[in-house]
Image (cartoon, rainbow over the protein chains, first blue to last red):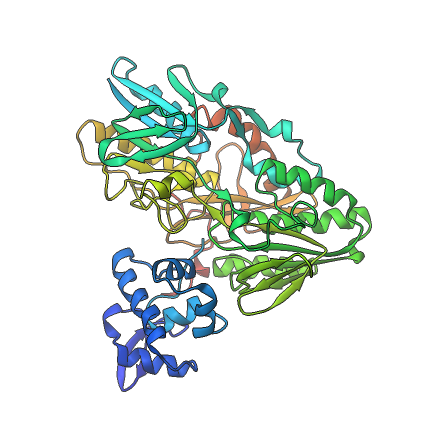
Length: 104
Length: 415
């Protein structure tokens, strides 16, 4: 398992830079990771990210875009504005969760 | 008298009814199947209908002809499951109580969920091939299509038979080549995935097969609407793809009564244990086949392998024992690639589709992730096997656990 150093912390990541250990993340690190992909976090961004984190602990998988839009009540269109181009992937990255499998 | 009630008489429901009718004594157990129609469709056959290679009559039979003696069949839609009280209400108001319930009502295309899809172009220039009516309507359109831009499109994952849209694209390429108009047809494959398929090794290979056939790939396309005036599909990130003929796979969802009964996730699939299919909330409730939220393909092979595991576990459960059989996510799918050839993929929860050989005593080995004529014949022969061996519950030489024998495991990246 690869590691990376983010904000002087050593964290475990996969080959695309997604964190692989749930507990190595906190909101400070999330803010930093968001900046790395050009996103400035607002309260609305945090609503989505906090939903991802809590849903992951219940379901054991990273939620799909549809699940975020229905369960966190943030319309898909807005998710594309908050996390442009690839919202599902970007939200998972910022939330320190595995890349969404979503589909098999 | 105890009752095993099965909602849905498709692949999973029919197999469960037949297998368990054999193992449960008729004096003590009722096995009942409820389905809203008495027509059983061989769904893998839908793919060939638009190309005039399957007649709708060939792939439809009476549902009740496929149950063994002693299975009660009720032709009714389901209204509601009252899980805390072990009871199901049917559309005509009848209440059916059960000791054990299996939800096997599958998944269905929902074009109404995408704004504009059911607009004025529906069944004119906007088509689907996930229903019998849809694939028959598309057959007429494919026959008179003389050129232009054909867009093959997936709305959102998961979908039933995730390889089917790729197969459609490959067969469309062959269809227009044989018609002598391939140079007049622009083929585009549009997907919400980041590549041609879900798993890396298969995705790369299938992606290069699209390239070889000059089928353009538009990835990460998450549809917002169909614009009937412009005849274009529009994504949330504001890409527009115009079409002369759109062949879409609409959003797939489980049955509405599942949501109404409070048993579904956001797509009406029933959350169950991925190894035993048992509901976490109700230990006498199971969901098998496409109706379950398993993290594997929605496919007939998954239903088939799941039923084998369920049968053994169910016998333990009703004997008051621990269920010791575990489903590993095993799926396999023939992929029709055109020109009388096909591919086979075989995978499970942990192992992605790999190249190699798939041994089947007496018939195989089939080539994995590689085109061959034998794979194509395997796909065609399967229709006979489906009606005559699979549905009746005859044991087949296809183990439910995936095997790594014959697979090129060296291609798996070190984790």
